[in-house]
Amino acid sequence: MNRVIPGFGLSLGITLTYLSLIVLLPLGALVWQALDVGWERYLAILSGPRTANAFRITFATAALATAFNCVYGLALAWVLARYEFPGKRLLDALVDVPFALPTAVAGLALSALFVKNGWFGGPLAALGIDVAYTPLGIAIAMAFTSIPFVVRTVQPVLEDLPADVEEAAATLGASDRRIFATVIFPAIFPAFLTGASLSFARSLGEFGAIIFIAGNLPGKTEVVSLLTFIRIEEYDYPAAAAIAGTLLATAFVMLFLVNMIQLWQQRRIGSAD
Amino acid sequence: MAAPPTIPRPRKDDLGARVRVGSGATTRRVLVGAVLLVTALILVAPLAAIFAEALKHGWAAYARSFAAPDTQYAILLTLITALVVVPVNVGFGIAAAWCIAKFSFPGRNLLVALVELPFSISPIIAGVAYLFVYGAQGLLGPFLEAHDIKIMFAVPGIMLASLFVTAPFVARELIPLMIAQGSEEEEAAVTLGAGGWRILRLVTLPNVRFALLYGAALCNARVMGEFGAVSIVSGNIRGQTNTLPLQIELLYQDNNAVAAFAVATLLTAVALATLVAKAIIERLDRARERAH
Image (cartoon, rainbow over all chains, first blue to last red; front, side, top):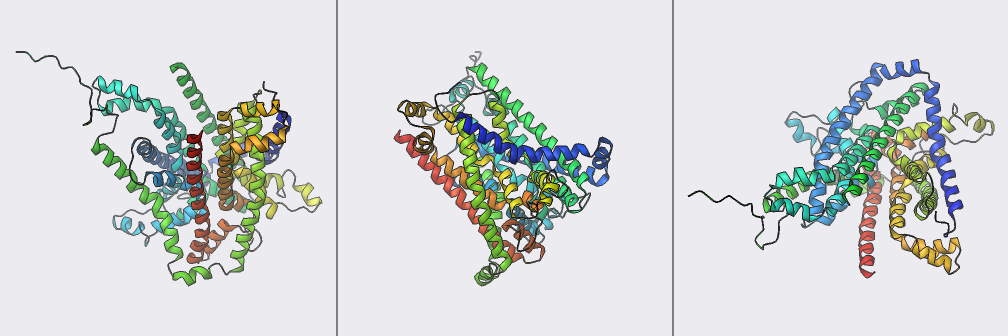
């Protein structure tokens, strides 16, 4: 243990006190309220048709948004890591827009684009595709807010990938497709999975970007975070506690998965040395 | 005569250099083109739409959007919230990074996970959680009521929820950098007789100043734009507890789209400034690395 440098007690004390007051106290209060509901009532709340539908819609649209980001994010990371082209710097900076732009602003902008007389909504309506006020709109809002996750986890791994393995495979006559599938993809897979999990987790809890574009029809386009908000406005605290408690538990499961993936990755890198 | 067995030859480009996967001109063009197209549609178009909608009825209408007292109050409240929350979380970020990066102790990994926890939790959950602490039915509700302290549906609630949501931002920028930089310089300073605060001020902070600045800028952008958590704890009282994102929603619901988009341009400008700051900081960092 390093005790040469001063300030360990003070900095750890500040960190633990602050985290206890700002993070653990409120989360503890939420868990306490959720447990206070009682199992029977808890299950009754979650299995009510409106709540069950909200969970179903949220998970389905989050999965769709994550699938999009797996493809687009991987392509984006690949292009940024492998090629030089005019505007690359700008593209790299644009990736962070969804993290820096407030979700409410993103939601407002996306709804303006996808309403019937919007830039995209008009042409899409002519093709018979409705986005605004449909689950597809929810998925697009989720996809927008979680774009950076896959890119920013995969990009550094791709950049650090040594060229020699690839070259060796090429020397042996393997095709690009085969090298990608057997050499490159396995190397980036843990990072890819981490990015996808983070993207999915973020989509499950998204609120601001969605409510502008979703239409928010109970049972059809109402997501879990919005339902929680509505229950709070109705002063139905047990329902809000049960739904928010379930979302919190889901977030913990996702975090646990991400940590397991990272442990697996570290072990793999460790064994390769 | 039987053909000789084919020996696979390494593929090379025109200059004879070995070729990496996907370096063919066609693959490259198709991939770059597709990515640029999708990015233009999903990332650039929304940004452009905000400004186009805000200026739909000209500059005069745009400027008029900021004359409403409620909007001006929302700007003021958002600035005040950021002025309180950002310095607090900069302080927390430095403390957390100091103990995590400079020392090893049992539970260190758990502490890192705890610092990053708010990042993985929906702001809506954060808002509900704060309501269960400080609301009338909450853990501290009866105590606060007895002493006539108002936190929920008031400015302190907005600040607390913002503190939660942005707690990891500065720490997350500092921790990996401070771990990578190691502790040799600090140890040397101790040997020379410097105290903790002096080391922090003269050695550690100058070494991480760019990451610190960027963390603070991100934290600021997020505080100003926080919507979910604040919309639960603020009670949405016009001219009292409305921050800019809530004001945007209110204007939009009032069918005052131009004003909603006009206010949105302010937050978009903050976001773009944050990204420009990041680009500049990265460039300075690279320049410094080269100088070393």
